View 1: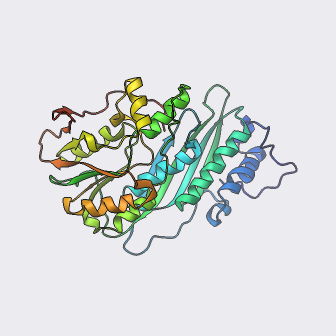
View 2: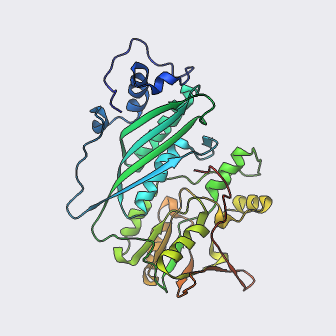
Length: 353
């Protein structure tokens, strides 16, 4: 965003105006959109310079940089518990957090469709800015493009993030070991079912609300509770849900994972909706939950730290890592049997993030 300092004779009509192709053309109209909407919402000293990039301070001595990027095409744009704006912040913040990093900065790219209402765009941008403030990150650079009517779907957002990884932290998918405990921070499947219910206008007795939230505070609580080396793996189980995330970890680490069905938290409305629609909550997306694989000795302390945080009140130990050259994820059912928890085949719920 390098068009922050132009002056304009008439303010944007953020109540009744609509996106037009001029907003993506690089001229006065684009400069006005950037200045009066994006720069206002994301105001900070780095962005205010108006250059083609942001010059940022280096992390503290001994820290390393972590970089992540994510695209967001969720439909509908607004849903119970969030919208594409807050989701775009949470998605990248969480990708950095589960790497053990302290998220610091974001950049944002917007693909806008001609004719999209400026009032809805302003609502999305304001939500995004509020989410960034809550997560403690700054949006320091960005880009805006406009496509012709009918060649987009309102708004797509791509975010990239930079975080600082403190010395001693090194969680990774290849670090799980037999005997480790598997923890989850709360009820699964809430985001995917909230999106589906909104998209299909499904009426349930209780509204299902997305769990979309920034996880960096929760991750810091974990690292404050045990030595860093005791935390082997951190992941946010988004697309493909808990099942796919655990299969990824098993494959990376060359281990098996055995789950206890009765310990996996699933809210009653989510469970009922999944049963009605023939879905397995293990495969439904989350946007505000984390999976932690830790040493068995650290499990109780990490559970206590999770449960003491508002985002981890329903945390549970749901299984253990096993020695299995086949790298299978299995679940022990309430009837005493076992079943395979395989990779998700195909796209269960498209455009949920």
